[in-house]
Image (cartoon, rainbow, N blue to C red; front, side):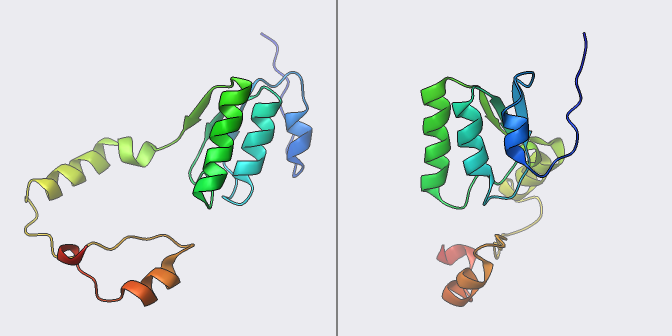
Length: 127
């Protein structure tokens, strides 16, 4: 099988327009990924997405709509949640093996400061 490597580029449209590329692995920032994904679907490219998919639910729905409309294959990466280490940690917490859960802290860099100012001091029992 002959391969044609894709040279590094900062212009994603060059990659999308190539007829010899059937599938993409998207690992861009959440501001670009929805647009690139919808364009890739429109051009018949199959996709594997790394997190994050988008900034808003509407953007994620637009990608889903494009994938459905153009019949492309789409997979979203959640390796961390699938790893044996993550699953073991969840089982330890759920089964009380590390003690009583006192507080849950969730990190989301895009919303962190707004969340902190609005929800300061909230504990797991107050969720």
